[in-house]
Length: 308
Ligand SMILES: Nc1nc2c(ncn2[C@@H]2O[C@H](COP(=O)(O)OP(=O)(O)OP(=O)(O)O)[C@@H](O)[C@H]2O)c(=O)[nH]1
Ligand SMILES: [Mg+2]
Image 1: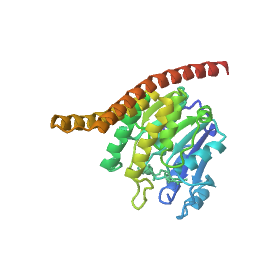
Image 2: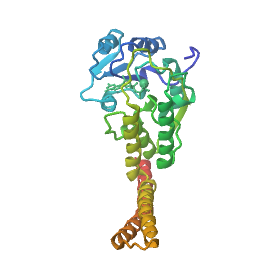
Image 3: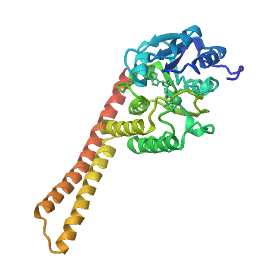
Image 4: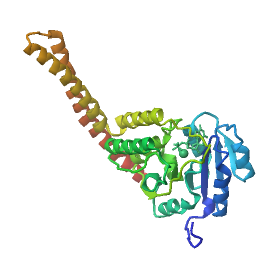
C-alpha cells in the first residue's frame, strides 16, 4: 500500500478477517504484512487446525477464535456475527493474496461500494490456478451471469470487502465452499453496489494443501447457483427446467416417430411424450409468472428500504 495513500476510512474501523485451516506456512507472514500496513484489528477464525495455525496467529497478535462448526462457510457466518467494525476485509490465509492490495478494496468502499470483490482472474501469477480451476471459475462466472444477469468476473474470490450495512442484509446458510456464491447472490438480490478490483493471485506455498476439491466443490457451487436462482431469477430457473423437460420430450418423440415410420406404434410412449412436452411448456408459464412476482417483490422492498 502506498504510504502516501490517504484513506478517509479510519483503519481502526476496519477488521481484517482471515478464515484458516492448517495454514501454518503463511499465516504469520500475512498477519505481519497487515500490521506493517497499520491494521490492528485482525481476526482469525480457525477450523481447529492441527498444525499450530491458531497459536502462531495468537503469537503474532491477532484475535483468534475457534469455529464452532465445520467448513469455511460456517467460519465466515460465525465471524460476521461477532465483528463490530464498520468495514470488513476478508482474505484467505493461504498466502495466495497480497496484503499490499488491500488499498484497492478500501478505496472501492470509500467510493461507495457495499461489497468489493478482488478479481483473481484478472492477473493470476503463473501456476496460481490449475487449468481445471481456471476453466471451472470461468464457467461458474458465466453460469452466474446467465442466472442473475450480473456479469461479475470472479464470484469465488477469497479477497473481499464488506460494509457492516451490507453484512446486516445478507442471509447466509452455506457452511462449505458454496459460501462465496451465496454471498454474491445475496448482494445481487439486495441490490448492493458491487465493485470489482483486479488483484494479484499467487500460487499456494509449497507443502500447503488445498481444502478445495475442484470437481466436487465445483459441482456443488454450480448447483447452488441454479438452486438459488429459483427464488431470485425464476425466469432463468424455470426456463432452464422447462427447456430441459421439452428437450427430453423431443428426444423421446423423435424415437417414437422414427419407430412409427418403420411401422411400429408406441401408443403409451407417444402419450408420455406429449405429457412431458406440455409439462415443459407449462414451466415456461411458471417462469413468466415467477418473474412477475419477483419484480413486484423487488419494487416493494425498494419502497420499504426508502421508508427506513
Ligand atoms: N476456519 C476454516 N477455514 C477454512 C476451512 N476450509 C478452508 N479454510 C480456509 O479458507 C481459505 C480458502 O481455502 P483454500 O483451501 O485455499 O481454498 P481455495 O482458495 O478456494 O482453493 P485453492 O485455489 O486450491 O487455494 C484458506 O485460508 C483456508 O485455510 C474450514 O473448514 N474452516
Ligand atoms: Mg486458496
